[in-house]
Length: 261
Image 1 (cartoon, rainbow, N blue to C red):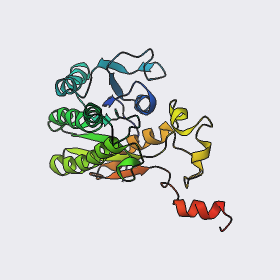
Image 2 (image 1 turned 90 degrees about the vertical axis):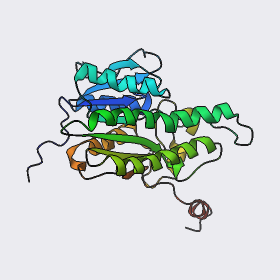
Image 3 (image 1 turned 45 degrees about the vertical axis):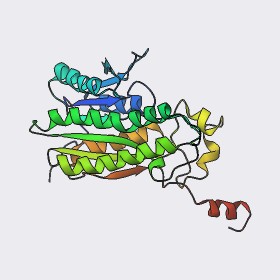
């Protein structure tokens, strides 16, 4: 079997939502480096765009929580490049909030960003991909919170659990032309990590991860390359954990700190 270069995305077209910062920025740069044409979106144009060598991502303004804007994003990418091969639903996130007092408006916004927006964008992408000979790939960036919620994340955890369920449902409906997969991300070192994990760059929390470190954005980006490419041609409806093995059980850490282990 001749597999060629499965990480060569030359002339393929990739849309990355939330691709102007953080993990999405690195995902966009990784696809650019692999030869793809990349479109990123956000509500406002950033000061800098993802790039690789002399090649740069194309920015389209879009609030993907709006179904019309999500559809317009896909239409804009197709108008520019003539096709769409990969959609990475990366836009998401939430500040911590007390579930007992959080406002309905807050809950609606978090669910809209983390669940409804990926649904709307995937629908638009599917309308294009299903008519292409090569089909396409949708990758949803989820969170370990869908499996293991933390205090202060009720709305976010519920939305991310919904995203995982959505992935599996769409994988059933849209195969074989369009594959839909999910990445469960764990603790990731980004520019905003200090405000979440401490000023030590995550060194303290790294001790609870079997791999001994927090994930880097490129760990997620490389998994996107795999899921979008031919190596994963039969991978559909999968939940790929990119969390270093999860977190060590509290009882183990307590026993270790007491000297019992």
